[in-house]
Image (tube, rainbow, N blue to C red; front, side):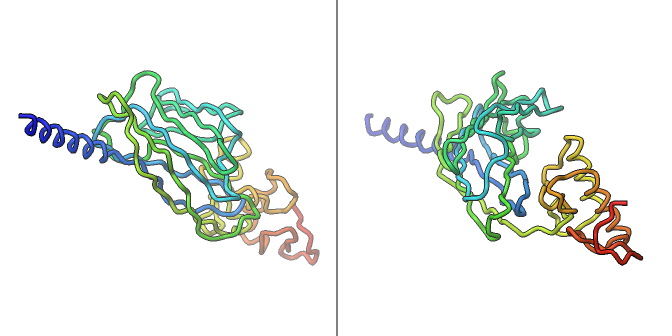
Length: 260
């Protein structure tokens, strides 16, 4: 009898472990240009309803999470995300509408995050696998271009119906740092009308997810303003032949940039 009970218990433990092991946190690979910013998606594939997620990110030197050391980001049901001025820049997704993200810088290159619903919501298995939150990275202008590794460690998931959380093995994501071209504000490898739009959105505090401030300062005056958007537009219609500190105006022998 005892032997049968032991076998049944072992089978139950295996089933529970297997079911919980199918709840997996991962991060999408990301490419970001020097001085640029971009969002890395934190993904969840789950076979159980999830009530909370905790993990730590370790970033390469020269890359940081935008914002300051700590804070809370929350949304009001999917229509808008609020980030206090003292908070790291993170956001929820459609899968976690109404949830709360708590972020804290715990070391020179490490950040800890907790994703939880304060109103008892769950991430159900009925939603398609995908992102549950996004973390906005910033790359320093002096960082060396190349491929780097982002470490996701100390991963814990709170499974609905379980009295304790479950730990997941550490995982990684690839972060590619690229050089940037003046005027390529959104980092898609070319200068087009979308870059001028990116600058204008930045000026009205509605920035794109990917924005390279150094690339947006196309006239080299150490600030991003309306003149930079105008320069991109003039470049696109052929009035100027390059985007740099000194530019030639068609029909003008002077090599100094003329904003008019």
